[in-house]
Image 1 (cartoon, rainbow, N blue to C red):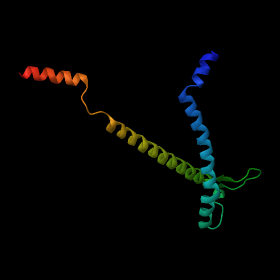
Image 2 (image 1 turned 30 degrees about the horizontal axis):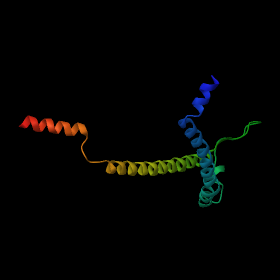
Image 3 (image 1 turned 60 degrees about the vertical axis):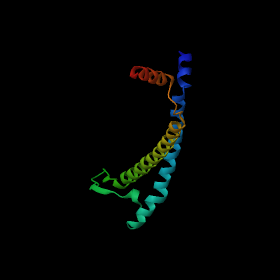
Image 4 (image 1 turned 90 degrees about the vertical axis):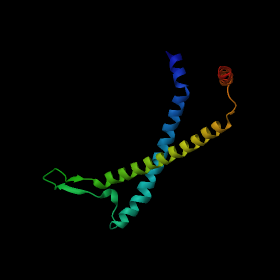
Length: 132
């Protein structure tokens, strides 16, 4: 069982996936920092100098020992902006990789020898003989 697991774990796809997860986590941290430390403070400044993440909507005031019931829409909007930046960045990255792959495929097609295969030559000779 250990041998089977070792073979599975050493396959290229698993290692590629693990690398992608690690890089994705680091990239997510960078984008979260961009949103938290740069974009949202600027949005807060535009919205009256208040931190955007602290934006709330009071649903129910405190009653007795129960605290206020708040809807934290600012934190939600911040998460949505974070998601949109990450997904757009991944889209651009995949588009870039796809364009490189399509260029390499076109170059391979252009490099192929245009001479006919042996089967095509044989079929051409048979066709010519049948015409006679």
